[in-house]
Length: 294
Image (cartoon, rainbow, N blue to C red):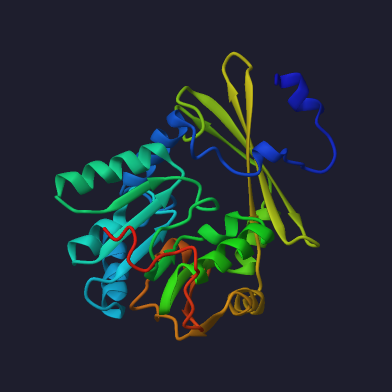
């Protein structure tokens, strides 16, 4: 795409199927994303270590000794590494090759037996059930309604009896706010989308009917080359989250308070935590209780 095409774009913002999610699995992109995960100068990619420590302490207080933990969208393994150091058996799944490789290196250096899997969490299926499954930082909201329902339903099947699911999600208002934010631009000597200097134009759209927030990023290099990236988020009202969990066979229980689970000042009022317990004693016949235990 060139500048003339960008200038002539009219009408409602529309993303192609390939643009509905940022390319986390592209090697160069994932490496740049890893650098942002590791940064302590901001917390838009991963939380600062002090906040993660508090959250991990709360998780550990909820689990029996040696519990099996699954982190869906684990990134560089900040949670799984700390939980494994406390004696829990951890599995982390993420779509970013750079993050998974870094997590594996850290586990090896610490002599920790953590199972890291480079895979889209929508296609993952475990060999053994878990005591605790977690999805943090609004991971659930990046999926369509159909994908989110399928994923939560599978999580229930992967649970041991009375296992618990922690889902940290965006508020409805926050997703809508992002979709209604005005267009903006910034100068980037380098950035997440490109490693070379560029201008980054950002446009947003909100669809009230589908409750989807869309963002389109235009990265413009000094030679006039334009590259498009896009992402979408689905907004859920509180009662819709509860229904989503209930329909999958979960019972919503008391969530951690803000002292036990701080979301950080950046995301105060924008993220909140749902904690749910498996309602039945059934384990999916596709999972063998003693198979694949690390």
